[in-house]
Image 1: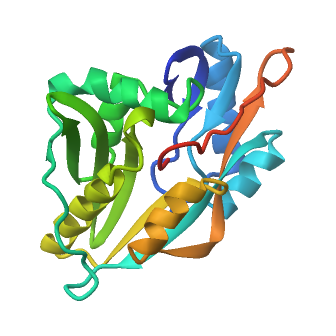
Image 2 (image 1 turned 90 degrees about the vertical axis):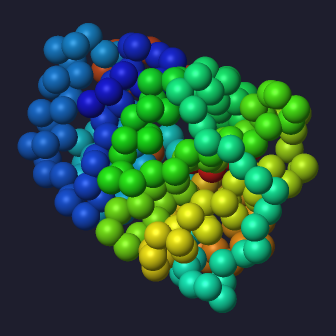
Length: 236
């Protein structure tokens, strides 16, 4: 359990192992812990269908649905290199967090601490930025576990879209995964994020039947806020 990025009053319940379905007791214990901490709500990470069933049975409600896409990685399917990217260094994290909030909005945007957590979420990772002059305008964080790759976060600032930056970052990640001997890659994005879905389709990703769900349990009496369009701009 972590603090939700940019909102310390909300607990972020993260399921680390997607292959391990939580039990009702697991969820009840997490909710009790959040209440003890004084949280006004609990939000989950993106959940696969079996985990979604468990949390919804505990009173959580869906607040976002994500499309799940996959593609194989082989020498024949790996795109040619795009424009060069650069390493995402520690002093880039503040700029990356600003880009993330710009791309996703205040509800879904990451802060510097949560971006660090994303980099530590897999045994191996690659974090890259693209720049316009000296300014960082987009970034991607990719991970690897076993022989599978994950495009974990991709964001480009709203004033620098449609310039090919997102494609360059995805191609860089795919080539890193190919060089590392990975066999497949997963990515998710908002079900209505037509720009991201078109990008991934053009790079050989195919949408899977399963969708992921982010769910919320309110622990106070306030009405659920309007969430807007959480998928606008980038992969989540």
